[in-house]
Length: 436
Ligand SMILES: [Zn+2]
Image (cartoon, rainbow, N blue to C red; front, side, top):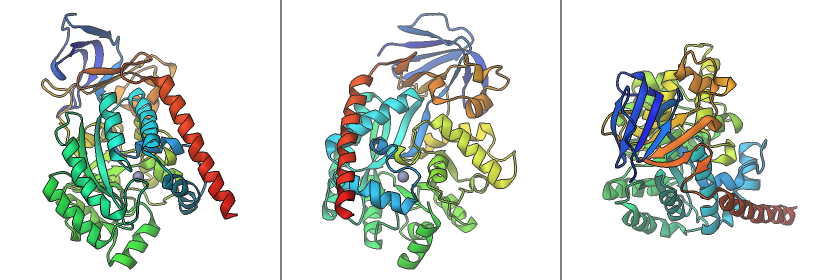
């Protein structure tokens, strides 16, 4: 693989001391070889950062990549109605080809906005895994377990599929298989117990939805005999798991999450858009020692996959909710978007240090909305947009630089996704007409 030298950047190392300095970074064979003031110009590719900000790649800790196909489909509807009238009818007819088309569109957007790794849960997991591997992104892709037939698998096929999916992807350098029980409201005790056994057998981690809405918490308490976090705890499914949302959790539940080493994937934009009401108690999570990561959720409920945008929402939501401008400071949410996500996805989380994987994002600081640059960390959170990302690098490979994709064909991917979305839109319209 060609070596890469980034010259004259403001390097936010995100190392243990959160050191920042102006200088160079050299990557070779997928790893960071050196960092320093001036490393010369001896590399296959030299990128002149000229004072732009270099930091570890952003990690999207909860998404459903293929749901880009549903972006803008039924916005401004209540969650239940939105699912019943738009998303579920469309999902019933999903094909593998469409999932691939939607995932490729998501990859374009994630690469372009600085995401280097994502944690996915959806149907047709092989299509998502293959798309990520082709594009050169790191991905954790869950085999979904849920108590109804999916467009891909009948209920009784889901467990054998999880096993074979793991076999296919276990040794891949970028993509790792995980287990995704959809949620405690859609998985029975028996299913959750099978997930626990599968986790032990396959040696992976669990990624699930948890305590997104108040209705869910009440519903699960009534049907399962305990609130979602407690249900997971009773099945030993808190241990090391990534729990998306956690908007309606108690202090005791946070304590249980901390004890079990569970990770919280905070998705503020999705929560706000779907009006889930509860706000993830970020400060209590941090105080208890729960690792917090950031996610976009699927593009159907966001509508973007721009993780820089999510850092701003994460910070502002906490501040406003708590009446405290000191809550969720910029450095904390940058930590969540980089190191927190890396920990949740079982990636090295030491920041930009020699020997670490060369997963990098270079953010331009030249646009008017980022000048003057008093504080690069705060500029990233409060000022920068995904469109300010100049370069995205995974394992030393440049995926996006100065307006050009290196591994993805933007024009054909967008055209294919448009065609797939059009077909799905027709299906939803036909179903709605048949119902009325
Ligand atoms: Zn989700």
